[in-house]
Amino acid sequence: MKANVIVFPGSNCDRDVAVALEQTTGTPPAMVWHGETSVPDCDLIVLPGGFSYGDYLRSGAMAAHVPVMRDVVKRARAGTPVLGICNGFQILIEAGLLPGALMRNASLRFICRDVHLRIERNDTAFARCYDRNSPIRVPIAHHDGNYFASEDVLDELEDRQRVAFRYCSNDGTVIDAANPNGSQRNIAGIYNETFTVLGLMPHPERLIDPALGGEDGVAMFRSLVETLH
Image (cartoon, rainbow, N blue to C red; front, side):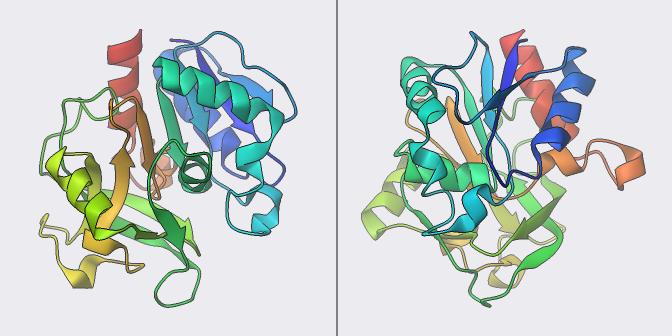
């Protein structure tokens, strides 16, 4: 599986994603600088976490309009799988590839801790190695992860089963107390209409080895390898 990781000024999880991809594929991904006008042919594009352009204007707003994103959007709309993690999720929304907005956390504070997610479906390229409705533990680290959309958009996401993950308790129960940032309907990640683009706030690349405290993130990268190899 050939993968590209897009690197922006302020990215701080690009190397973490590269390690996760190399660990699962055996091949290091191409690291593509934001100023490039195109990306190499590939099976997967990843927009990593961080604080692109210092989160000026809005998180992801500037990164969504850099030269390389024109090709990323074009490839995404043609069917190339794209994974956006944390700031990458924000960039996907700003680029128009996913609906909604990511606002300030309800607490108005930066949050950095582990959370639990419920797997809403496991028939996609990103989640096939997970068990549906089972909880996993994944870290978050964000200040603007509060997912917001109109009721019509939220209903469409629900009706089309495009919600990928929800914040939940450690037994998989979706409750307000398990929602770290105020996201509507406990949404932690969503798919596009064709389930080829996934954006999520938590960081699966940060839990891929027992030395990091767990391996619940590994299955996402294994899912991609099994689907796209």
